Image 1: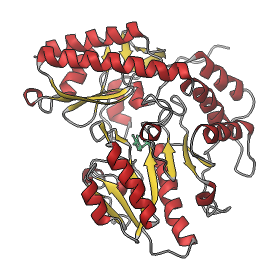
Image 2: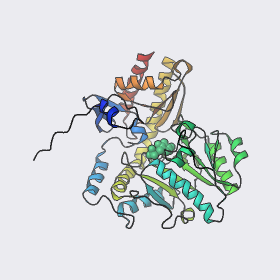
Image 3: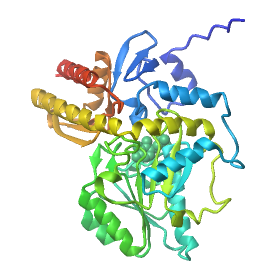
Image 4: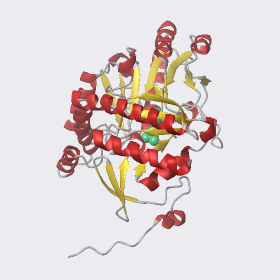
Length: 405
Ligand SMILES: *Cc1c(COP(=O)(O)O)cnc(C)c1O
């Protein structure tokens, strides 16, 4: 029996059936392999975006497809009345490779952050400090779209119209040690930050700032919570970005690269902090399901390998040098920054707020890139991208910028 032909759909269909909270590009990607994607017309693109820093091992990596299909033929889902071997193996791997002693699995970055903020509040209340609720977060930060995480984020436009918002949040300028020292107190529950702000413009925390966060948390009995949703899983050239800084968090969240495109996320913490999440305090129907965990296990083995991390660092230098050269040639960039394969190029005054124009020109050249705000181009290629692919993408970027000058 042959399957019925699928009905014809196009980009125009989007406007007639989808909630209009996105405004997708005109092309529709159809399939991918490694660092390449093809659209429904068969046009090829080099992928320097990886979704948004998600497909860290490229598209359809054979080992990950193998893990997915093997588990798909075994069992996909069990309730939390049961545990499963892929989730246990994955948690053991995270504990062996990081500060973590306990792991909670969820399905998205926002959910992992939601769990982290709830855990921080619960931890203090379980110690008799239900009043120790202040969460210090930072301007320009992005932590997700649930009401709790949108409130934690530092871009007020994302919370507009959704009030009343959860209370207890204070926002401070990022990398401002004096402002932090003035604010952290005995009432502070947690200091919550991205070690490298992704959506907020690819802005790394300074080592001094992260160290000050740790010291002030220790001094006032607050928890240091790092949002590594975007920076985790090898993206910055270490398995997690905190490992560049020599500062250990109390709670860490990660998601984007973790499943290589399959939705899974994790919250990592210590045994002492985890203790207050007794049965019934928190949960997720899908979190830690065997299908997602099996995929993430295969991804972990690739991204945690020394060869992958060495490639991230080598390709990072190549990308940075290429961006600096393009910046000089066209006077287009005022700053190139970031870590590993999460780099940002801030546009110079002459190209102010033209990041999306450049992104669109890149699509025309067959290159997918990202923006972070109106004036920063963001690059997040596969951690496995080759030297030749990186050189090709830089040449396409050069042509795209020439076309809009
Ligand atoms: C993308 C992102 C999130 C939100 O993740 P979702 O999976 O979209 O919920 C949270 N924090 C950071 C730093 C992110 O980059």
